[in-house]
Image (cartoon, rainbow, N blue to C red; front, top):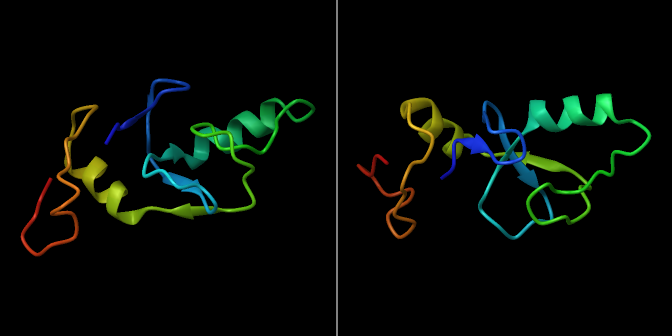
Length: 89
């Protein structure tokens, strides 16, 4: 999990992804809202990771917990153990 949003290299605070996206990567909600505010005329509501149209976003509280617990910018997560009791990435 990358704790930085690659578009701005700022740490992700509120991890979200588009409802229709098929990837597990997240981007920061605050960053996307700020970019839309600054670039109203040219901002296209597209996922910054896969470019799919953003018809809505979902908050990923599990990714948020991992980012909150780890101070480094990258965290390795074993997806086969993700969500099992006692697994702590």
